[in-house]
Amino acid sequence: MAGPLSGLKVIEMAGLGPAPFCAMLLADMGAEVLRIERPGKADVTGASGPHDVLARNRTSLALDLKQPAAIEALLGAVDRADAIIEGFRPGVMERLGLGPEPCLQRNPRLVYGRMTGWGQDGPLAKAPGHDINYIAISGALHAIGRPGEPPVVPLNYIGDFGGGGMLLAFGLVCALLQAKESGRGQVVDAAMTDGAALLSAMMYGMKAAGALSNQRGENWLDGGAHFYGTYACADGKYVAIGSLEPQFYARLLQLVGVDEIEFASQHDAQSWPPLKARLAEVFRGKTRDEWCALMEGSEACFAPVLDWDEAPRHAHNVARGTFIDIAGVTQPAPAPRFSATPAAMPGPARSISTDPLQFLAAWSHGKAGT
Image (tube, rainbow, N blue to C red; front, side, top):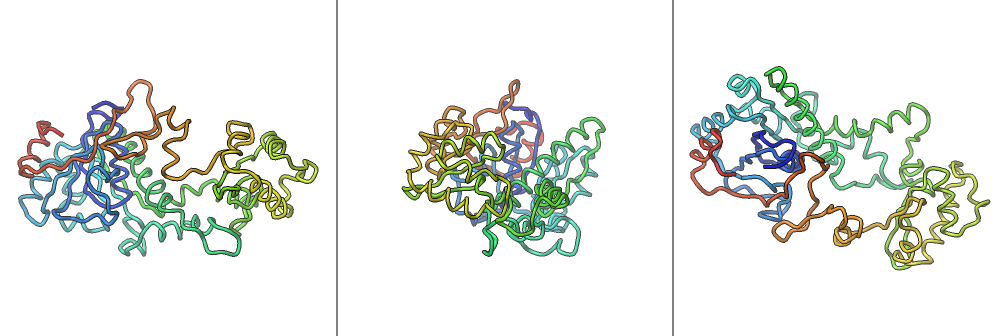
């Protein structure tokens, strides 16, 4: 396979959300990832086959881990793997006989990636939870929303994907680089609570400096400022404005045609509500396409707010190939991009129907066609 991680062999213990996303990132970059599924498992997302984008570019093997022979065969594959990824609650892999201790005893250079919500230790370590719970205790959820209204749920981007899967992928690559030098693997404990907090690093710095209020919707990056937010247009669609710097703010005022004296105090937070109301009135005077014709590509820092169908068709995304089609399913392309070792076009998820123990034995010796 092509890509900067070509040659790496990774075992993924299939789960939900962040761990599969991490495995997808590694597979997109050329790693050979074998996905171990439970027989007859049902995906609560409703996605399967080519629609299961998070499972792309990988071979799935159904394995009954209640059978001792299956555990032994999987441990044989661990002997030849560079990394293993699991996203179960603490203690599950240990009860299966697949915890870090036996795996690292057999393969001292193995990197053992663990993805959980609360982490491997702490008072909540064994409690159930989901993205919304993990980002709630990080401070991130509190900060998203309008003044006087409940916090807005930001899908599951912050915990599952940004603070979860991406953080684990980063940790795995760090540990793999270290193992390459030392020959010694280690456990990577990636917790979504830690990751969501880490994504908030700049905000905590601003809070310490007195530049960030605890009141959501009243700060310059959370939609409180009139020059950084979204506005409805005449057709009910929306545009996004990010005119932070003075020169970009000045260009915004010129293009929308408002009184520059009225809008002169850009950073006076007391003036934001009336100025925001005034801009809302202005943007309702044209359709989104009309605003795009006037402002897109300008120094006002403008973009249309696109839906799932519109985004893949936007000219910029088309020119860069930001979205691709795999087996009739439109989905994001691998990222980032590499000049010398570009990633290959991903393929859809593949399931192996042959004898799983034989396949594992062949995969362990590099003879399985994945």
